Image: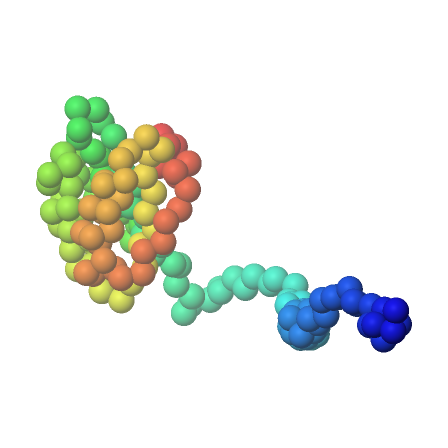
Length: 160
């Protein structure tokens, strides 16, 4: 009987809650919340209204603005037209197949660069249905003389 009185009851073992991972997570979340609110101000961008200037007078020159338009002629042939404006507008056309397109574009660009050696930009437009390889050939043929190539909408090439 004394043993029963002196004997302590077994306590249920309660597992302690480990709050360290929870605190780590909260610290990280709070850090990112604070950082994202400070960067919100930097993402606002206020631009002045756009203005266009038209140069007039004796020294005003019209931009050359060269465009290379590539159209398909069927049977794997392409019609490449290099058109430019400015004081002496002109165009150069050549017909080529997929294996000679690179050389044809290179010759067109060389003839254009001989007339306008200071020009470095070319706008390129292809018909909607032309393969991607034709774009690569055009860009490879033009980038030696005209390194700044800009792709424009295929609507430009689709126009008659």
